[in-house]
Image 1 (cartoon, one colour):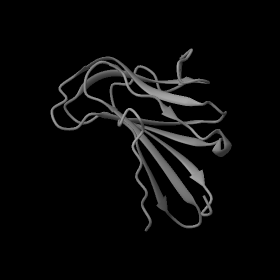
Image 2 (cartoon, rainbow, N blue to C red):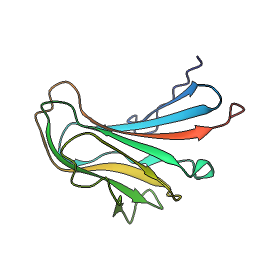
Image 3 (cartoon, helix red, strand yellow):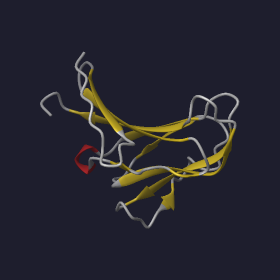
Length: 128
């Protein structure tokens, strides 16, 4: 297994590339521990579609979150078609290219050790 790590300028995103058979998967993640919007995740539009989106809301956390999508890092932002009004963990995908995704929580409480996490997974080829 080969693992690569790189921090963005905001030091909020960790990019991990994991070798799997038959292709590589690139994992991007961002987190929130309080209500608001997370750092956006820049997606590689040459790898779209599909992109898997996973939202993890830990046990004991009370949340009202959505995944937002945008063509650019500064918006405009639109709510994902199905990953809205989330009060529990959920999974979705992107069937069309977007440049950025972020986690947007209108309310969030009870976070003690594990924050709410948005993970985006894109398929890549082993030569990248």
